[in-house]
Image 1 (tube, rainbow, N blue to C red):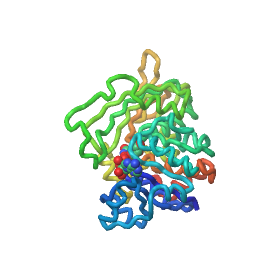
Image 2: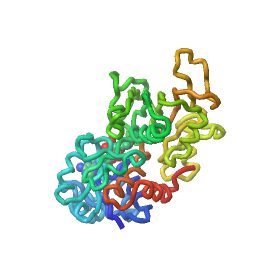
Image 3: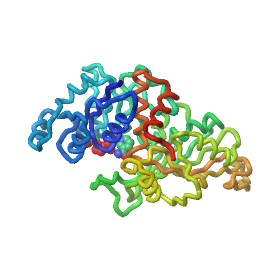
Image 4: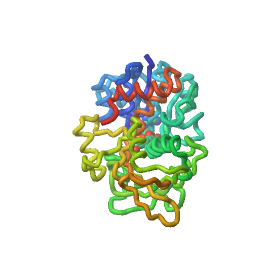
Length: 353
Ligand code: NAD
C-alpha cells in the first residue's frame, strides 16, 4: 500500500484524500491543516489522522477539542508521497521540507512550472513523472485543455488551438472573490497564462488562449477552436472524444444547457460533492468547418469533412485535477504504467456516466 500524506486540506486536498482512500493500492497516512475549522472537524470525523501544519498554531486544535496525530514533519517522514494542496505559493515554501525528509511531492497548478521536475497530465505525459521528486499537477483549466488536445493531436495532428476561457470568479465557498456584477477580460492582454501552461505538457503545440472572469462559481466554460492538420467529420471527432474515459460527451438528449444543469446532473448521479471529474463537452457543439476561404460547408450534423474544429466544454475546477493527482502518485512511485493507473483510478472512482 502506498502511504499518501495530504498537506493543505481545502478544496483540492479534501477531494484528493477521499480519492486516495478509494484506491485499492493506497491509504491516507494523514492530512495536515493550519487551523481547526469545519474541514478539520470533517477530517477527524472521517478518521483521517490530522496533523498540524504550523507549529505556532498547533495549540488551537487542542483548544477546539481536536486531537492531533502530530506535526506535519512527522507525516512527511512516514508518507511515501506527499500531495501538497496548499494555496498558490505555499507549495514552493514547503518544497525544502519535502526534500529534508526525501519524500517525493506533488504540487498543484497554482505553483510555478519552474518549481518542479515536470508538470503532469495523466493522459498526455504520465511517463515523464517516473522517479521525479517534485511534480506539478497542472491547473483545472490546463488539465481540461490537455485531456482534449492529446487525442485530437494523436488522431488528426494540430496546426493551432485557439481557446477562450470563461472562468468562474471563485469557488462556491470563496465569498471574497468576484466579480459579482461584471464581465472581465482577464487578463486584458494575450495570451492568458493558460496557453503557456498547456505548453509545459505539449512543448511544441501552437496555442493561443484568452481569458474572461464572470460572476459564476460552478464551473469554467471553454470555447474551443482547433485547426487540424487533416480533415475530420464531426461524427468522427465525437466518437474519438467519447472513447476517452475522462471526457464526458454530453448527449444532446440530456438537454443540459449549462453548468447549473451539469452540477444538478452530477448530484442526481450521486457524485460526491456533486463533482465532475471529467471534461463535460457538449456533443451538439462539436462542429467542423472547412478553413478554406469560402467556408460554405457547415457540418454540425457530422456529414462533410473539414479541418476547423469547434466545441464548448465545461470544466469543474474543484475536481477535474483529483484523478490526475491519484495517477501522479503512481507515476512518481513507479507502481503502475499510465494505462494501468488510469484504469484503476477510474474504476475506484466510478468515472464516467
Ligand atoms: P483552498 O484555499 O481551498 O485550500 C488550501 C488549504 O491549505 C486551506 O485549507 C488552507 O487553510 C491550507 N493551508 C494554508 N497554508 C497552509 C500551510 N502552510 N500548510 C498547510 N496547509 C495550509 O485552496 P485550493 O482551491 O484547494 O487550492 C490549492 C491549490 O490547488 C492551489 O495551488 C490552486 O491553484 C490549485 N487548484 C485549485 C483549483 C480550484 O479551483 N480550487 C483547481 C485546480 C488547482
